Structures are given as structure tokens and as C-alpha cells.
Amino acid sequence: MSNSYSEAEMPRDDAEGKKGGESSPESPTPGLLALDFDGVICDSVYEGFLSAWKVYGQLWPPPSPPPPGLAETFRRLRPVIETGWEFVILLRLLQEGVPEEEITARFQEEWCPRILERYGLDAADIGKRLDRVRDERITTDLGGWLANQRFYPGVADRLCQLLQQGFPLFILTTKEARFARKLLEQHGVPFPPSQVLGKEQEQPKTVLLRHLGERYRLSGREIWFVEDRLKTLQRVLEAGKEGLYGDMSIRLFLADWGYNTPADREAARQNPEIQVLSLSQFGQDFSAWRVERCKPRSKNSRN
Image 1: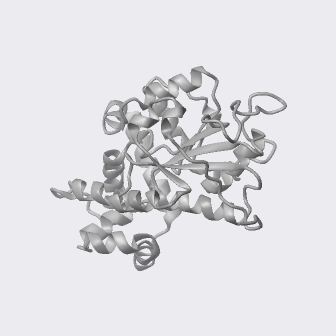
Image 2: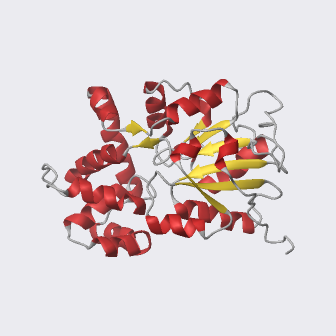
């Protein structure tokens, strides 16, 4: 059975639904703020590497310590990853000696499906194995699991500040929400569990953004979405052009401290509908974000 929210079940603060922040389209304050987790709130790349290496040992036995330098290469290539199971595919490519530039150029479109087919693997099974490894580590060595991940400087304080103000704040992540919630709890961030939407939603972020706008009555007002993956932001733009968001307005931010490349950041700067955001800006009042109004255009909108 799917765990995704129905239209009537999307999180809200009361029976009528919260109306979002008191903003107008011209206001420097969003009606609702949506954040990615890994690469925006948390640097989890080393934990991802260690957990994926354990799964790698299950699929290509026998298990062994990772070779020297593999973790550093894995970190450099982290921007190609969209969701966690792909960590294991990346490790296989590196162990097979595929050049970094080749992985960067064609990881999603070619190499992921090729490795799955070559070895008869299933993405969902790899994801479940990865979750089991994490659950076991949390049970047997919570301190070690936490030590392999860190929140970016100032992020926890900013989240606490917004939550204390009662600001509509959501996390949209491709990992299991329970892992994000555990990390938030351990960092002293009292994030409402229903406002952390993970892969168990079985919905892409484009659709989750639409649901949030509908439930928070943001027609004509703005969601601000902070994400470190440029392709995800580009999908939101495409969804807007296809009319997914109606008259809802979305400002898109690429977190320059996350898992992206200089080329990604330059491409974002060339796109007037995406704002490159620094970690310093993120920690300040919204007025410091210095954004221009940007709304994914409806397919039916006039020029």
C-alpha cells in the first residue's frame, strides 16, 4: 500500500488548512519554504559511501575494506546521484575503472540502466538493502552513524528560528523520512514529523510542491524551494511550463554549498528563473536572499 498523502491528508495545522506565510507576490518573504535535505541541510556523503559499500559487498562478494582513495573519488562524483540506491551503481562503475568524466557525462541516462541490466539488479531491492544497512547501524552504533554526517554550519539554528516563528517549513527528500527525522532530532531541531516528506511518499518533488501549494492555499503567492541538484530545479520549471502549478508561483534556489559542480552553478546563473544561493545568505533573513521574481510559466500563459 502506498504511504503517499491523498489530497485530504496533506499536512496542515487545522481543519481549514494553514494559509501559509503572510506574503504577497512582491514580498521578500515566501508563503512556504521547501528544502531538500542531503546537500542543503545535511552533508551525508561519507555515510552514504560507507552504507553503499556494505551493500556493494552483498552484491559483489566477498566484502572487503574500500580501497584507498575511493571515498574521495566518490565525493567528487556525488553530484551525479539523484537517489540513494545509485550510490551502489557509482561504486561499481568506479571499481570497473570507468573514467570520471564518462560517469559525469552519462551516469543517469546510460550507466545506471546498463549496470542494472548487466547484473540483473533491481533498483528497489538495492534501496531496501541500503535502508536495512542504515537501520542496523542506527541500532548498533548510533554514535558512529551520526558522526559520519554533519549539518552545514548555521543551518540547524536557522531551521529552529523559522520553526519557533511558526513559519510553514517542509523538507522534501528522496531518502526515507525516518532517517532525516533522526538526524534533525539529534541536532536539536524540533521538526514536525509530518513536515518531512521522504521517498515513502512515492511522489516526485514536482508533485509534492503542487500538493503543498494547494493545501496551504498559495494560489497567487509563492513557495520558495531550495535544492542542490540543478536537474531537479529544471524539472520544476518544466512542470510549471506544462501547467502543473496553475497560478501558483515558485522561486527556485540552487544551494551552492551542496552536491553540485561549478558548471551547474554557472548554468543556474544563466537561467533567470533560478537563483544561486550561498550558505551565508541562507542563514540570514529572507530579505538577504536578493531574488528576482521567477515563476514557472504555464504552457498556456501569454508572452
